[in-house]
Amino acid sequence: MIKRVALIGLGTMGPGIAARLARGGLDVAAHDVAPAAVEKAKAMLGIAGGVLDRLGIEAPSEGAGSVRFAESLAEAVEGADLVIENVPENIDIKAETYRAIDRLVGTSVIVASDTSGIPITKLQAHISHPERMVGMHWSNPPHIVPMIEVIAGEKTAPETVATIRDLIRSIGLLPVVVKKDVPGFVENRVLYALLREAVDLVERGVIEPEDLDTCVSWGIGYKIAVIGPMALLDMAGLDIYKSVSSFLNADLANRSDVAPMVEEMTAASRLGIKSGGGIYSYTPEEAGALQAERARKLVAIRRILEDRE
Image (cartoon, rainbow, N blue to C red; front, side):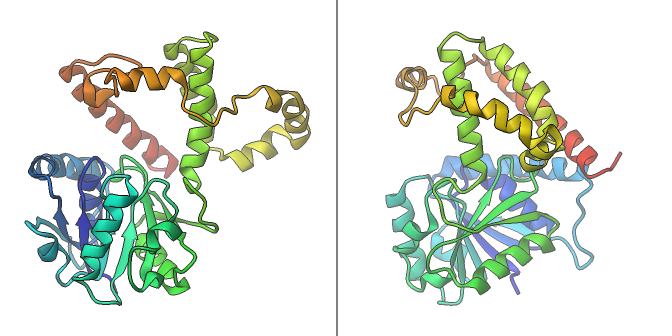
């Protein structure tokens, strides 16, 4: 039974993951090598907790868990039943982290990666007893989005997958088991296919960014929040899909490189909200207000999807 969790690496996702695990009754020891990331996480924990309150997510009857911040990796993983790796998306950094964890925990401790798309099989090469390593991919913001992908690498034991799947269910979240260890898993493959087409349409001058966002949010996004893609095929009719895809598929973006528009913006350090501008521009005040507004709307949508007023 998993009760104690070590969360290694905080970044964007860490505070929400820690808050949600603790609300599920687990004791979390969080660690990051960057003091600034720890301070930011401490500030974000209360915000995430407030969102969970608004969602009506209560601690189990035996009591809420806790979050504490550990000064060292050794302190964080001591006594852990599960270690969740959440360090940057760089295979060398992850490999170094696994080697360090390997020296500090027993062979039965499950090591899960929150990688957004590096195949778990590649990561398993850097840890002993790879049967205990599994992908546990949360979606941002993790304290609001209830779906978590569970991915086995080539050497992951079925019992490891089952343990993480059952843990996710036990704290009131939705596990999705990905049957093949493909890059990007499922959520990001679907998302990046959409983003590739969206960027291409804007870059070619077909539509302005604001209008594209309106089109997707109030068109397909509005529907897909309620009706998944496979169910949408049935609703629209497979004959209609066959007819339209017979000519449209050949015209969709299929580039395998990064779009020039994105290359140019990143080269100019226009990285999005975190840099004050990307596709759009943001003042610090606007960024804070936008994030709060989006959290409020995501909470409201989730309550509706769960059939709660």
